[in-house]
Image (cartoon, rainbow, N blue to C red):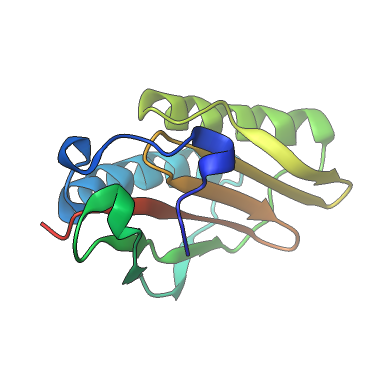
Length: 149
C-alpha cells in the first residue's frame, strides 16, 4: 500500500504530516459524518462493521522511519444507495461535501451504472475514502503514510 501520488502528488514532508493517531481521529470524525449522510438516504437502515480497522507499513520517504498507513473499518449499510440516478448522485455529492470539509478533493465516480456506484476522494497526505454500493452501501478510508506518533 502506498500513497497516491498520481492523484495528489507526493504530499507534505514528514515534519508536516500529522501522526497516524491524529490523522485517524480526524478521518474517523469524517467517516462518521459520511455514514450519517448515507444512512439518511435509507431511513430505518443500520450500519455494521464488516472488516476491522488496521495498519500497514507506510512510505518512510514520505513520513519518516516507521511510517504507517491506517485503514478504517469497512462499514456496510443494510441498504444500497438510492436506485434513482439523481437521488444517488445527490447522496454521493453530499458525502463529497463532507470530504471537502476535511480537505479532500471533490468526490468522483469511477463506476456509475444502474444498480452499482463507486466513488472516491483524495487528500494531500495520500488518503482516500471510497463509497460503494451494489446490494448494500459501504464506506471506508485508507490514510496516506504518517509518522507513528
